Image (cartoon, rainbow, N blue to C red; front, side, top):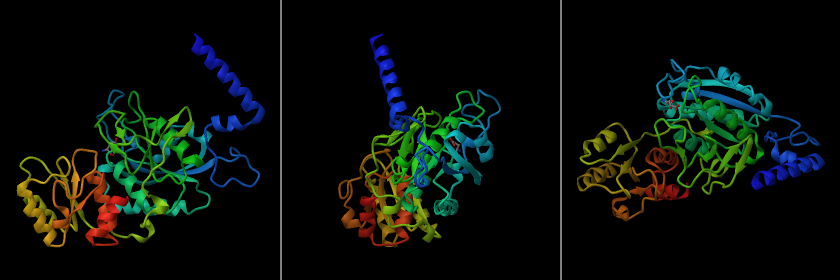
Length: 374
Ligand code: DGL
């Protein structure tokens, strides 16, 4: 009772303050200010212009019935139809849809990643575009967002969004996720924070976020927590990414036309040493070894990895645990073997970073510094 009365008087106070000054109102209203408002315009005078690029995934999925929450066809609904199904979006931004792919995100490869990145870069250069939202399958959001985070040369917000349930399902999460993504992309506070991932009321950095559950809506996690929340139309940031991204990195998507082959080999009891050889034969320039624990390498795997390194292939020790730092010269003598450790990048993210790093250097010392930097 007491708490309710307190909240009511707080609400009344805020309302009168907003009516008097307009300042509190600006803070409470859904943030939709453009990045370059005309002189003299207030923050809400113009809605932000957001391009929504559709790539497929469950957010573009449809099931046979409303109870199909996890069994359905992904990547079938066109992006314009998805946008039209969330009319609330038009209240916060001027949006335009663009279909670049219609695929499950497991089908992303280097060519598609580059094509997406280059198109995003092109759009970001347009003065009439304030931000980009990318609808994407959830399986590889963490790879695409990390790639964009490292290669886009713009401060404008880029938000990758997906859903865990198709729009046809009971408890579908796509509509709110998309609305939230547009809110975040429209908010000037999202500028300069790198590529963001928005799902399930949370804002994550593309560097850290990873999918941790096959079907739950609460699947995206960052080991250090999200950067913020989206609540009742408000974009709330609490942290900023510490590692360099977008404008601060050494890569420019416009200048990358091909990514070198980097293989990930997953370790397990009785892992077959031939998998290392197969990666080398397939043209891998580097192997990310998703090792057990703190990058531990089984005694029978050391020689095959050393042999690959002797052939010029870079070896990156990573961990299959899902989080934590792989410590150099701890489980293995990396200096002696001329190997690299990942810092805390997950194997699939280490693959992205290594492919980018190899476009600039093949020096293992420089590559190690890159892993510690990004
Ligand atoms: N295969 C998945 C993908 O496109 C569908 C899962 C999803 O989007 O949640 O990543």
